Image (cartoon, rainbow, N blue to C red; front, top):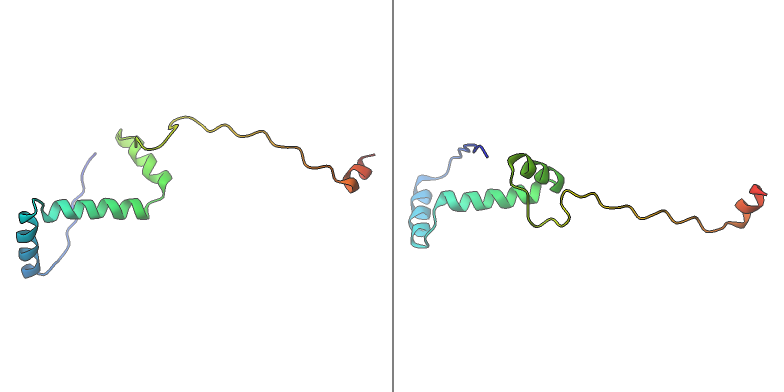
Length: 90
C-alpha cells in the first residue's frame, strides 16, 4: 500500500526528550505515531470502509469470519394470525 506523509509541528525540546526515552524502550516517535494513527483509523473509520480498503490493498483482515461469503437470510416467518385480518380476507 502506498504510504502518505503526515507533517505536524511539535515542540523541539519535547521531541528530543521523547526520542531519547523511546529509544531506551526500543521504539521511536515514528513507530509510536504509526500505532496511534492505526488506532485512530480503526476507531474513526466505519468497519465497512476499513474492509473495503483492506480488500483493495490485498490485505484482507483475518479476523472477519466468513469473509467473502454472503450471510444467508433467515426465511421470513409468517405473521401471527390476526382475527381482524382473517375476517377481512374471508
